Image 1: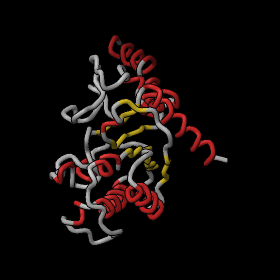
Image 2: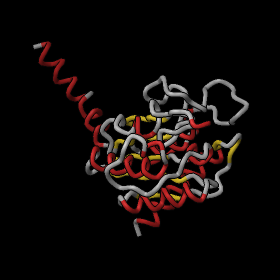
Image 3: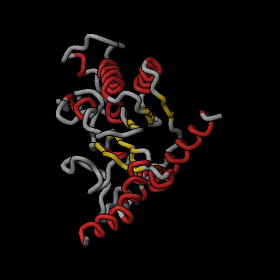
Length: 230
């Protein structure tokens, strides 16, 4: 009898909350330093830019000051996985021509859990590192192709559309990137029918969004979504 009563109490007190949590839309992030925060990335061995401790490179001190945390909290979503890695490129070429194939976006793109929405925030390091841009290529990618931005970008979106059927994918495009990278992202997103949001005038410290810049990112996502729903 006690077991039965305990079971009923458990169902009454715990299960509604669990059901409610699962009913919220799940969000995963595939990103670089802009989307990191100490203790909030998966896996936790990923390199981060934003730390809990005092950091003169930024005024972002808390996870709830990041763009993704603000957006998820504001919309009542739940986080699935934030697989962001500071300094990472979309393609397998990194800074100084080094091989980034262990932590590039295409290396991490299938480790995002089971979300309803995926935000990809990338291309910044590809631009800054001046990686090879390559040609537009939409099939039959070789290992060598994936060391170039355009074919790697196409391979990533094609693979993710197949791997996450029915999941909404949104690409955030940083402002002030090279023209080649910016236009290539737009072209390839349109090819795969992936929603894209071009950010503008983001406030930064040391090249990374400040607290003000994080809020500007959220505001611009909200403005885009509001305009799209009309």
